[in-house]
Image (tube, rainbow over all chains, first blue to last red; front, side, top):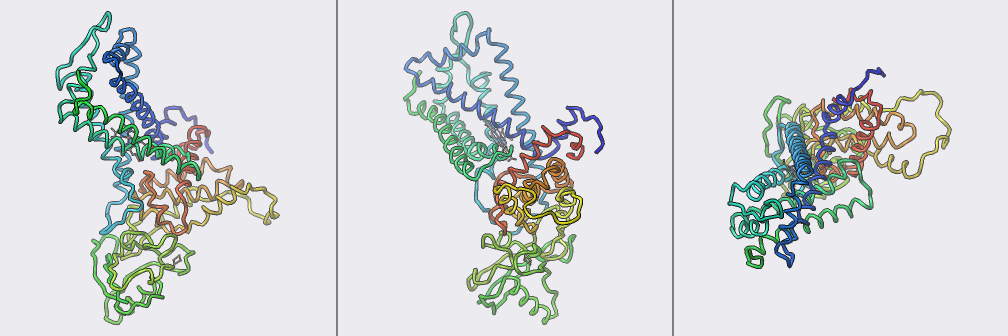
Length: 237
Length: 256
Ligand code: HEM
Ligand code: FES
């Protein structure tokens, strides 16, 4: 075997060239995004606190200028992960379509696994929703955002912005749709990422699939409860 | 019983496939699927028409030559069964069956239901072997093999290379085939030294052949006549990551 020095960058490119490398990138970035989804849900559930300013205190903590660098780093990291996740998924999807140029007249899908087959649709719709969601509640280009004094600086009045936002049925409806699709994405994704990096076990993988399904459903119910509570008037400004 | 067939027919790989309807009025339920096609062909020849081309050899489920899609399922509706071992008692009088060849960019159609599967041979040539000096057969049990490794390797070695996994996969991926070969060879001590190089070479060759990649759906395992399980694909993924991340890197030239 020739012993040409292979630089790390060449190895990284060679790794990503291979479909299994791309899948590993999707699995790792998917795991990061999944972690973010969980953290984000835990943050959001503070809206149910008996103290209506609780969630604003949390927002003020995140927006504290002292944490600005950490916030910037976290946002950059998440954006890079989203970028890699989307790039790899689109590349794989195109390759996989090209692998069967002439389709079947009749094709049976066994097992049905709707969630697994619709990853390329649930993903982009969730992505489009996230863009809208950031414009709505972070940038403020959908509805004017309220701010409150967070001590020495202004921070968003999340309690007000979220509840008034979700009182609009269109905003709430899009949110519920997107979360439902995120649920199907994670239903497949949470176990699939293990398989992609080679973790499989005859006894534990079936349990993992059940856990993934449960996790996806709990995350979806937790998130969907918020717009439902706003529409029903249980949460008020 | 009477069976209605809709067979995808094409003169050669370049021709556009057309579904043609045939009736086989006198099917015995004890016939195998291929015998039913033989009856159809006898009839077509008697009428001076072109018989339907299909592949077959052993007709006992061990060679991997036969196979086509039957109503959208590779090797038909019976799990763990090759087309030659599928019997007509699986079907009912009057059933309408759609027969199509394996479809994949890597499997050019030769004629009707016959496809060229040499892409799978090239995957084997790329890495599906072990390099050992031949000589006298080693003594039995001279090389200890853990029981579990022997079992898993044997299960994977059941693969007959028919290509049903590729045909059924929504991505026309050969992952189940590759995983089976990698598990079969790599889990045994004789195959272990080349494990890194083997997986890298096979993965690169699969890309060059135009196979798709795995999205963990599991259609392959559902139709595999030898019931090879998806965990061989996890093993391939793990071997590949191991080779790329912990391997020496000199072989990663292959990974393009
Ligand atoms: C909150 C956002 C998201 C989370 C938590 C997430 C999570 C995941 C996870 C865990 C996987 C499994 C990875 C694997 O099988 O190895 C996955 C796969 C996938 N994701 Fe996402 N994802 C998100 C957003 C997106 C977006 C915006 C797209 C847009 C294209 C997308 C497209 C896909 C596709 C197509 C797959 C399947 C890849 C394959 O099987 O080859 N995802 N996702
Ligand atoms: S003809 Fe040999 S397996 Fe079917």
